[in-house]
Amino acid sequence: MCTAYRMPVTGFGTANRPRTRKPDGHQPGDVAQKRKAFAATRCSNGFLTERIHPIALDYYLERSNDTSMNLTTPESFDYLYQSAVNYARLLDVRLPFPKKSRSRYPRLDIVRLFEVMDNLVPESVNLEVVEDKLAFCLYRHHDWPDHTLFWMPLDFARNLSTPTRRLVLEFIRRFMLHHNMQDLKETYYYEMSCDDLESRPSYDEDITPREAQAMKKLVESYEQGRIDRMLKRMWKRPFCPGFSRQLAEYCPEREVERKLLALVKEGTVFIGKGVPSIMSYQYDWAHEEEPDFRPIPLYEQVMLVYSIRDVLAENMMDIISSDQRETYSLSPVTCMRLSPQTDRLFCMDDFPERFARWFGKFTAYIEQHF
Image (cartoon, rainbow, N blue to C red; front, side, top):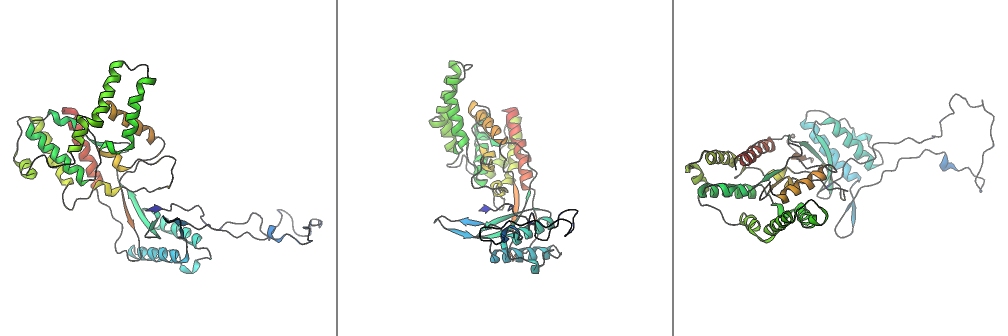
């Protein structure tokens, strides 16, 4: 998917000095006639006095076979126009863009139609490339906490009794798979953090030899040690058979574990058949092919980690925090692409909001008690 976001040409321009313009404060005949300068051919340079017509550059889609396709054609405008007319009909309004007002420049017509749609609907509007054609996309951001990392830790499970630990880890495993979460080792922030921890003793004089050795052992554990084995284990077989039945029947002796399992039961509504994945709400509304700083994707804000307290995880947080000053984060968005066959109005649910509230409550309880 490629976003053709807000094309720069927004309308017909006017020539700086049209042929019919008269000097301010003077009428023809008030000033003595001056001798005109002619070109070498003794002919007037007409292109200097004629009205300059606007030239709209076309938008081309680059393909993998080193070819390109023009997307700002009359056919593209017709598709967008029919989509806009159809959606205006669903809104029970008339599209304020009569087809007879189209010009000789398809790109300018597309831009004008885009502005009409942007003012017509309450949602934000983009132009998307869908199946090698331009299409309107309506989108709206969900109420998502800014600059918040929803990282699911695993290290706290060591402090749980064996039956509780198996139930909690099985829930996390199912939760992770359902929402297509990745673990921190799959991100480039992890590689940057490992490189920084390994080289930090060479430039940070405040780090003691003991701290440097601890950093080295931590990186080794992430690479080929106990932490690496724990993260890999989450992708394999279940931790306990009959998860739903055991979760309903088991009652731990410790109160903190009973409350933890109560939060697990509350979180089961976010997994299972018919439940959306949080990653399905990712949408880059300002996509660029080669940005100076890439936006922080949703799968790096919501992911599986071993700990949120060790030096490596805290270093990753610092790097992400530094990137957030230069770019933006992809918070959950509901979007809908329009076509001439669209038969419903834009609507959005509150799944990301409920997801964020439960996730924050679950991880806060873990941090407070374990």
